[in-house]
Structure formats: structure tokens, C-alpha cells
Length: 81
Image (cartoon, rainbow, N blue to C red; front, side):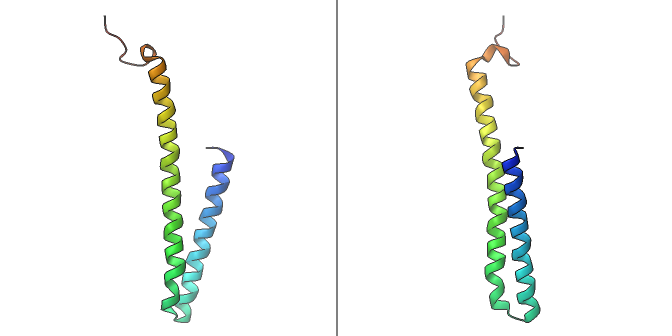
């Protein structure tokens, strides 16, 4: 994992924690209508982390497929005699 991805994930995780903290403060104050915004932002941030990791995995698979198509005999199960 690259340094930029690690830093981005740490920042997003910290922001998720802040949003959960805001939600806890709203609940503590009894302002349940104000809880919707920080909870929805936290959910969106979790979805961003999930989708970012899936996109990264797809990029790795794309590169592996490109290598396989360039050199199919180097991979397992190549040409049969």
C-alpha cells in the first residue's frame, strides 16, 4: 500500500471518528433531529473507503490480466503439448 493511500485512509478514518463524536454530542443533548447529518456523513465515508479499496483491487487485477495477455505461456496452465 502506498504512503498516499495510507495517509488518505488515516484521514478518512479520523473524519469518521469526528462524525461519530458529533452524533454522540447531538444524542447527549437530546437533539435527535441533528443526528442525521453526522451519521449519514460517516456512512458515506465508510462507503468511500470500501469503494476505494475495491477500485485499487480492480487496478491490480487489470495489470495482472494485461501481463497474462502479453505472455500467456509464462502463466500456469499455458499451452498443452
